[in-house]
Length: 369
Ligand SMILES: *[C@@H]1O[C@H](CO)[C@@H](O)[C@H](O)[C@H]1NC(C)=O
Ligand SMILES: *[C@@H]1O[C@H](CO)[C@@H](O)[C@H](O)[C@H]1NC(C)=O
Ligand SMILES: *[C@@H]1O[C@H](CO)[C@@H](O)[C@H](O)[C@H]1NC(C)=O
Ligand SMILES: *[C@@H]1O[C@H](CO)[C@@H](O)[C@H](O)[C@H]1NC(C)=O
Image (cartoon, rainbow, N blue to C red; front, side, top):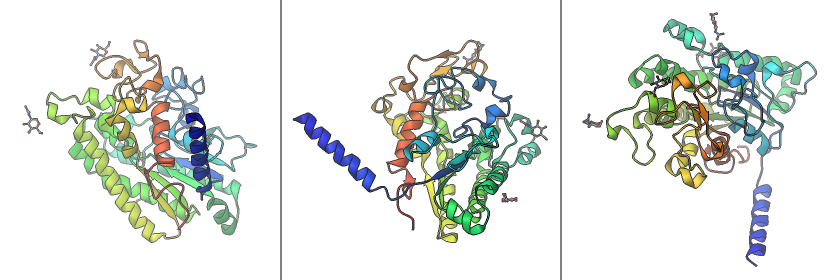
């Protein structure tokens, strides 16, 4: 009886979800960094982060390394699956006869929103994993666009059924200076520049015909084992007692998000025909940092599954995949994969918070204005 009732209820729920889906996308175009890269950085040679060429990267879902900085699928993969689209091919791997009508992924691990010359001018250019910043990725998109449509009318018709995911991008613009020893106060001064670059790319895409745009914010870097291990503080009041995350670095991520949301709102007024959605990666992931076991993260949310030991299983000289590192038995019980990037399980949770939950404003599935 219970079973029948459950079946009925779940059938009804499924019906409600399907019948209330007003919006489907026929293609996805994605820009960003390692949170979204499905292979471009690997195709470039992955010189700055060679561990990504080998297992355990990719072990959970693909069973081989794909260039994704995780054990399995990323948020963008779960979004593609939710709209019944193929996983996005990386731009640098596209062959002449490949069908790109369902979308392309331009994201490159290590990419920044600002152009490399900015970082070279600060004498930290040598830290960059790639020079393929957001503007390079946009130029790649323009090349692909040529093969998809010719007249403005054709292109507008084509892209109004596409979802554009711009990010996450910007996180590395802060991570490089942090890695070089900059203080939070110093890095804060970059936020307006980074936001400008993201909004500039968003407007450029709208001018090119994009109508549906998802622009994700930062993930909580104060919960990242890399930051927890390298910016450890003897003062307990620097930590959020509930999550164990570093308060100041999380406040920094929230500051970026607030500024981004404000600027996207202004952009929305400028382009009323478009639907500019903010993707709250921070909020969606704080759910599992606050209550890890509720999400199956029995290994904890702020300890890396794969790493070289220490309190958060993070040691930069024994990075995941290098000699001296170990991999946890079941990555799905960890939110963090390698100290910086998250596990497939965590990405799945964030993606479902964005697609079905309240973490996209306006919702990803709502009708056009
Ligand atoms: C980026 O460009 C600079 C200057 O052209 C070059 O020296 C550097 O090797 C490039 N970096 C990468 C990661 O390709
Ligand atoms: C905005 O984007 C365009 C096209 O990509 C680029 O030429 C321009 O320099 C960008 N401006 C800023 C402020 O980033
Ligand atoms: C710890 O940090 C708090 C808040 O920043 C500060 O008020 C307090 O003086 C610090 N304690 C120590 C022992 O440094
Ligand atoms: C990281 O690993 C190196 C090499 O084994 C070791 O010397 C160092 O003490 C470790 N660092 C931490 C913080 O555990």
